[in-house]
Image 1 (cartoon, one colour):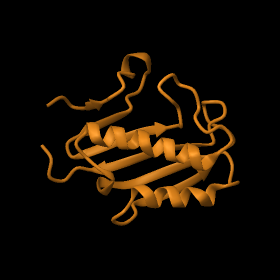
Image 2 (spheres, rainbow, N blue to C red):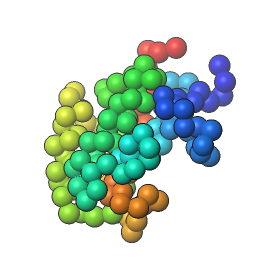
Image 3 (cartoon, rainbow, N blue to C red):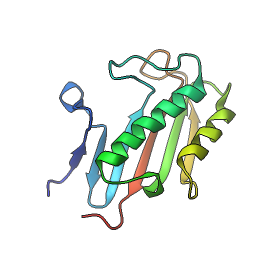
Length: 131
């Protein structure tokens, strides 16, 4: 097995200097994701709840590609540019984390790399019984 197994269901790795997710042993590290569509445009401009939902949909795609699911996530970090509407993101988390919540950190930042992005989420998953 290579030292790092790249998980990239979108074929984006050649365009960037990072991978959407990498697996090392039974650990899966998911890069910070913003609410972009397949053309790189922000979805849900001005709506942190809609952007959060899109981020989690992208996380789901990465988990699926790795043979994992939300029960495998042990840690998330939210980087947000505004606290307005942030409480609403908890309802989105409840949609995806049905069997308990991972450890989590929320950090308010001045801005994110993508204009109009209100939130960026990264995650770590442990894939216990997978080869």
